[in-house]
Length: 168
Image (cartoon, rainbow, N blue to C red; front, side, top):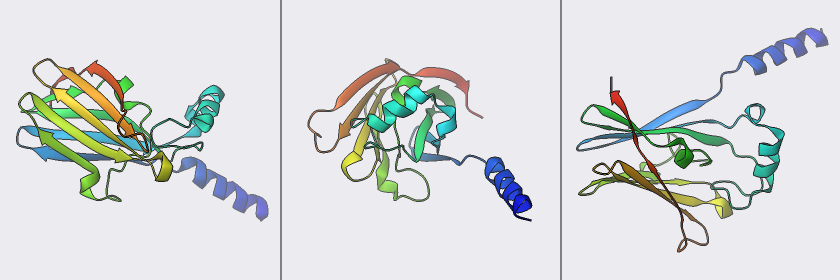
């Protein structure tokens, strides 16, 4: 009997789908989307796991493995779809998006050249704010990560947004 129950429990655990959620914010010209999923240790190499466990400066974690990780971020402007470069999205852990968080943790503000997206993540000493300044004229995005307690010295990365065709 024990063997049957263990087999049933294992098959349920192994067949449980990975949580994935997409959150979005509207503005006058379009929408911004962010997708997160459960952090899955099995998808990572041992080297990546060890690096994350020892990482005191990774956004959203503080010497422990994250619960969620960002997977995609895109922008729809007047039915045109643009993806953010993966190197600006990968490595953002425990973002405060979705139905479990208040809307103020993910905001969009229009500028003369595009939009600024702000999103919070992490918890306690691993808390951070990410700011994406999207310039639709030059097709550039600048990401700033403000980690606590050093909010005055953000980590800055830039990349090109990629046109992906018409949005459905």
